[in-house]
Image (cartoon, rainbow, N blue to C red; front, side, top):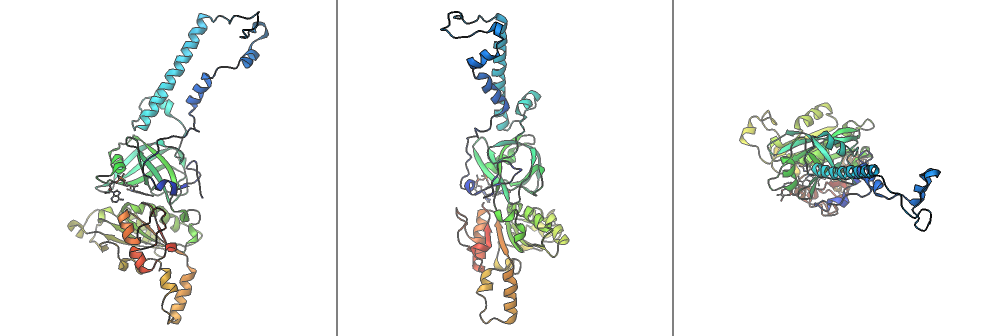
Length: 411
Ligand SMILES: Cc1cc2nc3c(=O)[nH]c(=O)nc-3n(C[C@H](O)[C@H](O)[C@H](O)COP(=O)(O)OP(=O)(O)OC[C@H]3O[C@@H](n4cnc5c(N)ncnc54)[C@H](O)[C@@H]3O)c2cc1C
């Protein structure tokens, strides 16, 4: 299992985290902020023996009450009392301000006072081990309900493809996973999350109410499709069915596959969304199709085309030419890598052409990835269940795809 303690090394697998949506409130005790460590150190009383060692022989004093010559403790001077008092007060005030500032940061209020920033300027970065407040720097509206949220990482780090980052609404202790957009294996100083707002949604509403400059508690990255990371080039063909914001999981895979210098991996994508406006990254996908015509094929479907989109919209500047309606076999046939069933249990009469096709196809290693809202994934491939191992049903099941040829992303 690929594991990670900080984001620069990799990602934890998501299995243990996907089964719950309520954030743990506990924080790691292994991490002690330098200020806290200092306080703990000062609070510890010095050992008598070491204290004695530090005294010059002439002024040596012991606190051993059994000694007849040094039965009295030395009288502290007024000056040293004042110094001790001032030192203790400073430490106490410092500890209080640090705690207070931590509370301000975690509740999303950004400090504008450099004094407080000093206390919060820890070098921590995104990690799976604990929640870290990450600064939200930019919000860009992408559609009526969806925005792109950009965060500045405290330190540059690498976010593997096919990974997710958890975001926590600190007020209600609820967390949700989001897939970073355009994550590549190279180090980055920012993370972008494309988040759709649901009117009853807890965390998506929290994010859409957030303001630029605010700090948001984040944790991750966790790996969601292990097959996509270091060994992406094990695949000859990758078929994809994305629903709405599910496209975020595929963009990094598409980029990595197309720029893989070792092998020309073929990608086919059916992107389903409610409206042309919600076909995120459509311009970029269309550009990539033109740039890599031998490798990438993309097809679109929308639930319905609004009357205005029959002429022009920002997302569909010309008349809509894609599919309309939920995903069907017709939309997928000829686009995705074929199911194994069609190859191994195919026509027994077996013409020479079919045999050749069979042999050629068997050599190719392919996978079909499905990512989107739960209802869409269920319709396309059947419920993934807690284990993600439920048999393939839905449209892909009817076409003959088996479990080892389909991966349903958690949603
Ligand atoms: C690995 C992974 C990656 C994800 N990546 C993204 C991403 O990049 N962008 C993104 O926007 N979301 C993504 N999600 C979904 C996200 O985690 C949340 O489920 C989503 O934001 C809704 O959370 P919420 O707290 O707002 O709604 P909740 O409070 O959990 O749900 C409240 C209501 O909102 C509605 N609702 C919630 N989710 C959906 C949905 N997906 N489709 C339709 N209705 C819904 C339902 O009516 C539900 O009853 C991802 C999920 C996973 C597991």
